[in-house]
Amino acid sequence: MNKKPIEQPVLLGMMRLLDYPELATPQALLGFVERCVEQGLNGFDHANIYGLGQCEAHFGAALRLRPQLRGQLQLISKADIVPAAQDVSRWRVKHYNTGAAYLTGAVEASLTRLGVERLDGFLLHRPDPLLCADEVVRCLQALVESGKVGWLGLSNAEPLHWQSLGRDLPLRCNQIELSLMAQQSAWDGQLQAMQADGLQVLAWSPLAGGAFSPALQQALAEVAGALQATPNQVALAWLRRLPGSPLPILGSLRWSRIEEALNGATLQLDAPTWFYLAEAARGRKAP
Image (cartoon, rainbow, N blue to C red):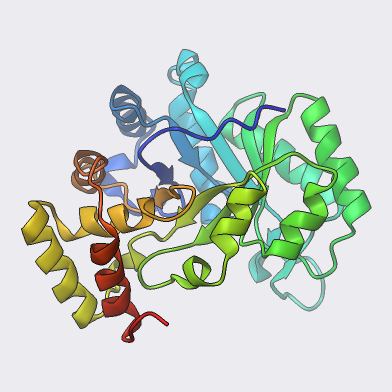
């Protein structure tokens, strides 16, 4: 299996796709996707629970208007979270399901909604405390061998999760929350461990949903002024300075925000600037 990393400035997260009126029609969304590809952005990060499947369905409706575009895209999806609204048991409880039947069905349902024959990447969405490793390994291997999945990864996994499954599966990435406001993995060795194990780091919520503390907002503005950049560009550059150059998953689909990220893609921070921002976010000095 190809473990070549995804090479583009950002991935585009599809979780809030339905929140954008300007992308509400398949034709409008197709135009957006085409514009992304023209700018070198071809990776789209889905999950079967985004919009309870409607985000994938809407994306698929757009892609059906121009099927030949599929060859230029990298489509990633995730599964194993069962929201309470989709729990068919008497308990109606959110839970995880990594059973072979569920994962296989989730992949096939995503393929149907997207109108494609293969997911480029498929990730287990959250660590399942009831995961049976042998069953999951056989299931994911079968999905790859069938051609329905190109490569495999994990999301929100801790070291023992990826190391245990990685003995038998060529895992390509781990998608984790990572930002100035969620920087624990930068300090506890997890990023170095992922790099050592050959996992690309995909960073979800890289701008913390805009919820930067006042102290961090001030520090970002100071650095942005010194570097002739924007605060968001500086925050993304802070991520790129980390081991493995984590790839941000941009949650916003506003073109101005995407363009801002693209224009700042080459911005680099030196070590003192990185620590200055980390300290502002954490509220304490480095150990």
